[in-house]
Length: 584
Image (cartoon, rainbow, N blue to C red; front, top):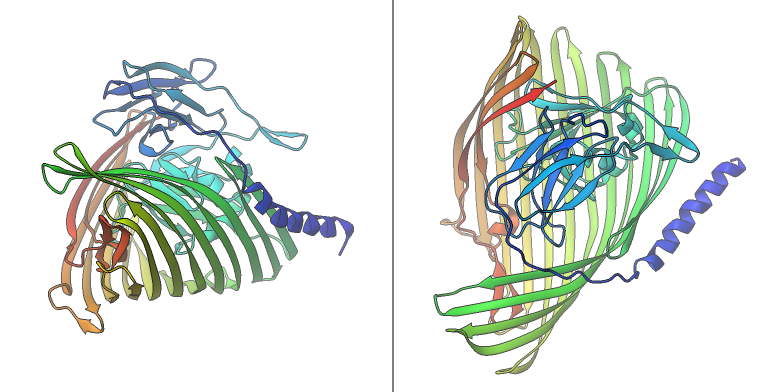
């Protein structure tokens, strides 16, 4: 091992050890002034030559930088937000190759012309002047090229996604404008652990596709999809990557990782290790009305500390151009500490009845997090085969103390212990076959999951609880796509059978347990007319409550506030129609 490698490893280890010291950095608080703003916001984004810029992300933010909504500029550089939003205060305008801007919202709502200055990427003493990424509509997706563009130098897959049109987020949590959290796929494999995005270098990515109306190949509860395609590996031998990232908001956090690969012939063996140390602020304000005369106001201020460590090892083997297999196993530990102060004002007919303060503190340990994946990609004759299988098992334990005092009832001290366990097995098979000028795909998907929760507390007004949710989802789908001249068409149908069992203290609750059988159609058409790309999409979807929404366990917040899920919640059906146009 030469001196350069030794110095790199020493630097990496020093960064990991020193990051905890930075996590206690102080910052000034932010004040808020409420103003009346026009509900209709608009503007035009141009470059220094006054040329309109398309596909610029424009994000609407609250005073605390909370995301409200997002949009992208059209071929004329224009954008608009219409409707009522909860206390909008800023917009953030960003595009690859330009310096981002954060602007206060004018009272009229009209930003006029926003000029973005060109920004070059600096790597040491080297100025990177790659091409701007090209974004275009292809089929049902908005495709952004990464290879050969400035996005190659972004850092990781996470750093690429935050600069892709229609996407906002950070730290493994992303949202597609107007569609919520997306399902993210890497080379056709669903990402179930967000740490994977930190382990992929931006230089290895070919392109990113954003699908705002995904078809029948995807679960009916998925409202948006991000597909990441990587480049084919090149060359043999050993390679390694050490990366450390520091982020500063109110506090400083660090993410550190070490990735190693060995490639020979068609075999690639890899091992990834890493960790994150972060401290973050948590502020909330809420009002609940139990009737026309009763009102409860809760103000929460606090912070959380997170320490996360993970390891991953696996292999892939390419027999030839038509057949490849791979598998990996990962595990990790997360320790999450929090401390929140609550102030509750209880009133009736505007008369204060009680003021209660409490300090809520505790920790949650997630150990272990087993995750394994195996896949096969191949082709037999003209039939393409894509097979993936996943297994996930995790456990977490939480210990929470609420130390409170109120004007009417005096002091109180409440302890609670919780233990959650989850396991999931999933497999998906997709077969494809060329037909005329397109393809036909058919496949099946099976997901079996279980989530259980044990909760023990000494609060007199809350009972101990033991709940469990078992769910099996079996699906089959067929999708047909064709190209006729300038027109692309696609149509598909998905069938899902979902069996959902809810248990309390080991006993099945028939009223809360459900079985669903549903058909979900989809259709899309795209074409180019006079330098304008058009895409029309329709999909049938469903929105199912998650395990946290369904969990009947009641958690003690304070003497007036309890928190829990509702096991009687039912899915809702959604019919989505979208028309997208892009000029070039």
